[in-house]
Image (cartoon, rainbow, N blue to C red; front, side, top):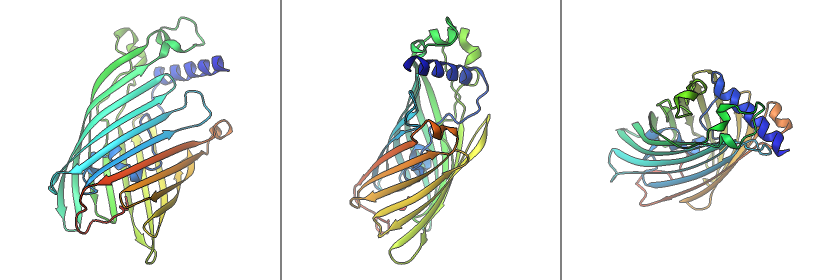
Length: 310
């Protein structure tokens, strides 16, 4: 079975590298509305104190070499001023490919009454690793699968803009603007032509009161990349007694899911999400799981909600 799985991986990777890109490359998150810094640097400082978020996503459980993604983000305003700083570390692995992203985030915020207009920049490095020689390709001696890529390091840059208050947000961003290639050598340039393309994200949401102790928060995420159709996520979350979020998600033609988040204290939160595939993958996969842990510390600014709505 392992040999068959490796052959499947090799065939899929060859199709991925040798043809125009027809799918999303960047990781996707069901709990994106609670992890916005991973997508948009303009979100930095929005909690008005130091905020840390750790997330681990395990996609298409049951497949050998299925995608897994881990992110760690931290951000804070600088002395209650317009400047905010942050950092993002991400590990994304699928099959023989693993990528590490190390980014610094900076945001400039313009205070507009109860709302803020923020402009953000990301800058850092992307480390690409590919254990292609470990695969068992259908065609023996295929030169694509004879070269491992252990330390391919590329600079990376991104930007974003966001308009938000305690009740709503809307943002546009591209966390990885620079295009990177998969291989270092000119002899394999023909398979790396598509490379890593920039992805564009449009996000938004609003919080409605449903009485004294309940809130309703619909959110959306639109994803676009050259070579793939535009996709979108629609999510409906309900907040009970400012402690417990419960929601449902629909990802166009891809998956449906459920998510929950609990505020253990005003500073500590834990969240979980499950996706069930709508495509034929549902016959072979147990779905996708996502776990998130959040922690905030420092003095809370007067008038800032705790817990946060997003």
